[in-house]
Length: 405
Image (cartoon, rainbow, N blue to C red; front, side, top):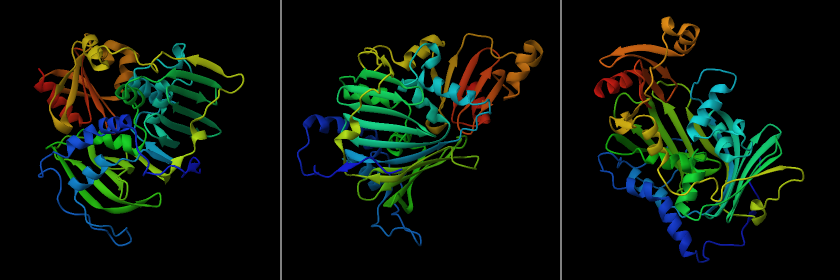
């Protein structure tokens, strides 16, 4: 699938608006902060190209992170392939849908919403393999299209207007973008989908419990790239390694791969198969609702309420207080449901047996409970209704539950 059409009439030499500079600085706040991590964490050995890989100038991990943070690329278009394999049980697609709704906090179409609502639709990316077309022309013009068989779902932002269109249902969702650049970023990156967004999330975890090195060079979508390798130093994490291919010229992440500590296929693998850094054609961001389409109007700020308590604060209040046990890659979220935990085989009958078939019974100083596992995130539900969840092993969850007694 070819990238969106490009227009080279605007060059990088043209002056940028001061507002764009401010927004760009805010977007890279996390990677810039990472550059201050101690040298003991960030590898100082330059990249060495293997036979057949691009022969690029030497660079250290510190310099590569700084290059990514300083990247001022505002325009690109291309095709991204993203595959996600969490190892969820096969429930006829139900598991992936439930995971997506849990991740977004959205009730989805079934509660009277629109099939085109991005807060529900984009959560489908948490499972399976998908092909995306992306186009960016600054902070206020973006397009992301998900291609599925003969159907297409598109999310378009053009200035203050946000449009989403689901061709399968012929439904349109329209909203107004928030005034604040920070609010726009938060609202539309709930489900990271591109290598850049995934890399930004990964760099948030870099601290003195992390090893960061340069692992040679590669070619991605016809572009020469350095490979940044991020690995937990701690035992107990389900994350084996994160590999990021960073464009040698622009500093833009081109490919993101997360492999589990248990081995096997990648849990998340997202990379460009085609990419261009030319200015996308203005028509890329034009949208007119098709004739006969059902149109749903969203809230005045693209579905984002006025600033109030955060989702985490609401969750903490509603679930008896959300706390974090441990640190670094072994951090575990803990909260109290106030319930009785899961029914056992004897007490719950068929329901207890059904739920138990998806989990492992464990015991510790905390008592007993059931651990539900995926290839990345695991959760322990104790008999007294407490929940411990994180990207850690079953043994690490038991230790966290014991430590929280």
